Image (cartoon, rainbow, N blue to C red; front, side, top):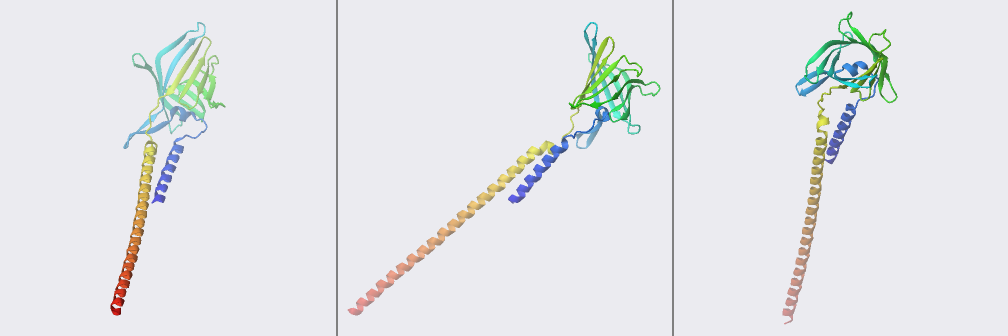
Amino acid sequence: MARLVWTLVAICAALFVCGTVASTPEAKPFAFDEFFAGCFFMSCFRSVAFIYCNEWQVAKSTLDVASGEVEQDTLLGNYIMRVDNTTGQLLGRYFDNDTATFELSNEMEVVVDLNGPAAGLFKLGADEDEAIPLFGFNFVTQKNGMVVSVGSWGSEKDGESRYQFSIPPPFDKFTITVQTKDKVTMYAAHKVIYNEEKSFFQKYSSFIMIGVMMIFQTVMGNKRRQAQEEQARAAAAGGAVADDSASSSSGAKIEEITDSSSSKKKGSRKDD
């Protein structure tokens, strides 16, 4: 029984370790589509699953180079993106949300053409003829883990506006800094995080281990009590045997004394 309990403990520990390792993401090359437009399933109930695509909220602030004043935009930009499995493009929409009135405005389609895992062209507008190129990108991973792309902002022929797109680990936020002759604009974005449902072992692994240890302690306690009871019964049985042998020897001695006294009486009668 003890071997069975130890086997259960080992199995639960192995499942816990495997679940922890499986939930830890492995380092891999940066891919812009997975970062910016990855979709995932999330189960709110056991029988109901929803598909969520990455959503980004962007805050905008502008620095006037001449005056040094910083203006914070009251509009909060939003990107909702997905991957088109047919064309390989990233498709989605952008809209502004007024943080004061919660009104939506400036809605537009967004298209990203990919030339590789970390390179492509970001455009505003779904129509190929009317789409406005915003910036081309080619991300490079730095030694500190940050992913950076720099280049022209706006028209590809316009070399006056430059940008830097920076993505720090763990890749749940990014900043875009756009510099022109008279101002610097910063876009600071963060990913809207949905709480994914944890796996069974992530939820209940601690309770499983506690239950297994309680069962183990109960089984071992029963085995110890059984051993103590067996020892007590053996000791009691040994004492009873000793008492029987002692009483038997006492009886034999009494009989010998009785026989000897009887024989003496008979001898005395014959002498008379």
